[in-house]
Image (spheres, rainbow, N blue to C red):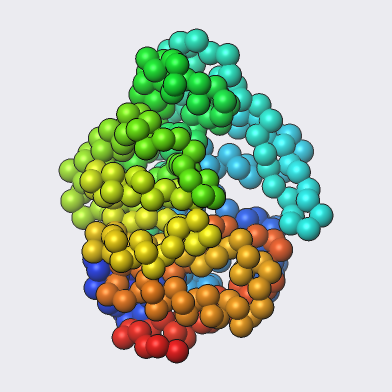
Length: 361
């Protein structure tokens, strides 16, 4: 099978030759892997538009072109910088876990009327040259995904601050609806263009989960976000009935999984195993959703042994992989403190034990 055939077979709830594989990295972890593979470069493609060599070198089954707010995460090497949305970022160095950017400025904290701010222009053709290149050069061999994460809730609080957005949903509902309608325009434009370019999957996402529960109530999710996702999913599937839609949320989001299914979701990511039981979600929703992720990034990958990693991969394959509907991946970015041998053990064991028909080991 080609990588693309393998991916699409799995998403259609059939068993390909093996379970599809993916991983994504922080910039430091990406550089570590590239150096291990003999690619000496400080250029990284984490959250960039055109992808990079690592997914192909590591035999991933799909390539991702990123667009939108998430591209601001590591956009500049300056100690502090401001992205195109006006969000202020600053680099922080942690002795045992690498360097990361954190938000230090929310430009819309004091805005009263959503009409008073200008959105970045997502009709610009240059935003989609990376996706065009991936589709044209690799689209026959690999699945191509349009990555449009940090879609609505996350963008809302990146711009305004978390406390303000929570207050708006409770006490300033008219403002919040108008605000979200304005933010919706970027993903409506970007997602529709990606579908038109011929990507196989549109990947959006907003973190609604904490470690053991939801950030907002299911009722607020249904009031503010579900109808807007329903609009997007319906539009994209009208543009191309074959396009698949993936959704990312960290944490425990058990209460809203049926809502996401109802509005047309195909793929749920990342099934964070410290928050939701992958075997349980497979049993409950495996006939309706493909699950992408499940491999523990909080404990096993960074702090476990190679044997722990192998056993984790085996467990996820056996409990989630049967019947297709599974893309195995770490449940978030591989961090800089994850040992190289553990990263390699993930890939090696996913291929070794992920061949269909899956067997007990």
